[in-house]
Amino acid sequence: MFVRIFFILVIGLFALISCAVKDEQVTFSSLFAERFKKILVLPFDVYCPTESPLPFHCPVSGVIPGEIEPYAKETLDRLLRHELSRYQGRFDFVFLSQENYELLLEEALSVAKDHVSVIRYFANRTETQGILYGKIFRFRERKGRAIGVHEPASVAFTLILYDGNSGKILWQRTFDETQRPLSENILNLPLYGKIKWLTAEELAERGLKSILKSF
Image (tube, rainbow, N blue to C red; front, top):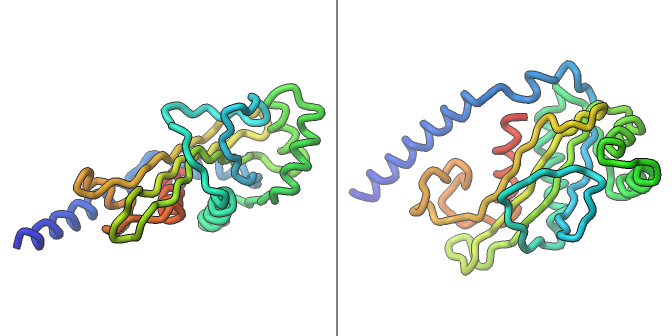
């Protein structure tokens, strides 16, 4: 009887949270869809503690970098491409391959003096008005199975949209989550989607869906 009541309460809470999500703040799309027709989407970067300030200014605080699986970049690039397909009616996304990104970056750094110059160079060369940039800080796979883990999945990344003309940050969202038992925080149920231990890819996918709701 207690278990039944618990699940009824969980379902009710989930419904209330879902309704609240629909009443979010004004999205980036609703404000800038007319101005930004084409957006350049760069491959994800991986955090490096010794990296230089160039090429892209990425202000993130409070995120603790950690283990990054070798397949993290490929996974997040694929997930982001899929999630952005939902917005194709509002924007024309131009996806840059890793090879072309590195070539263009080399060109930009040969003439640019700061990150604003790099952004302008990318925008001019690709005839886009905005640049979407992502950086991975943590992508740790779960250790164990869906019904029981020794160590849960942990994912942290940020997405930033730069104005291709001014180089200013117009939109930024950061996802930073290490899965915890629902008994510790029942409010995480909408994020986790189900009562099981997620893989790093599943957690990252849910993170992208969550932060792109304001795009």
